[in-house]
Image (cartoon, rainbow, N blue to C red; front, side):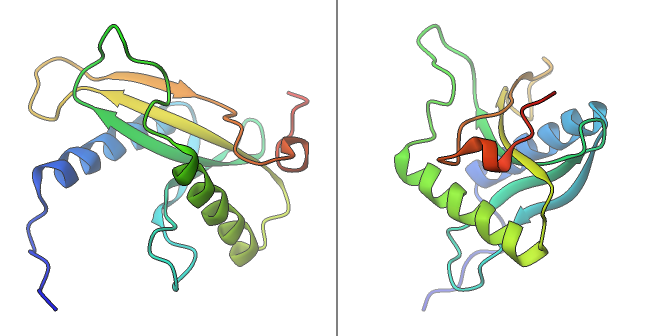
Length: 146
């Protein structure tokens, strides 16, 4: 089996930068980052949650998918890169994390989109989309009262 290179490629570096920007954004909102790049299932490496954070103000666990794009274009539509297959993987990963950590409180799923590049002098644009419908019955997983 070929060995993976130790140095990540440009896409991996850009993605890591996007996650760093998203984490700082979440912290600025008062969230506590519980885990990054969580892989709740040892048997399936595809199941990954970019950021698990706790929203103290609303007493809710937040699962965050981070999407990094080089630039925003006029034809962009929100959440464009999260297809049905990715939603299924995210749903399975969140459920596995909830079970593994025995979390019984409120939870929700957010997407943070970062538009920009690490080497750019311009600050990145951040779109934080809260309460993305991930689960079939969101009332079971999300405290909608706030």
